[in-house]
Length: 80
Image (cartoon, rainbow, N blue to C red; front, side):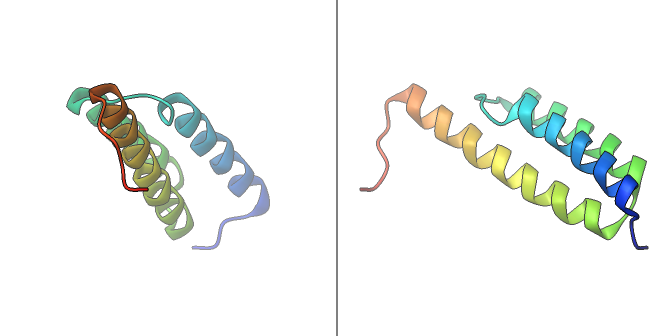
């Protein structure tokens, strides 16, 4: 399924809202469950391969930043 420009614009807005809400937070397992629930809602709204790829990338980034904030809170240092 090919997404039209207007639908893609709406999808980007929804994905951006999700990213903005969760990206700069330390998330525990309950928080990650909440992220997954929100991702499911957005994916069900669009059900397109493009939406799936964008959402997978955003979830990966949210997980990466959540781990960063978790390590920072614990006082761990990374490489370099």
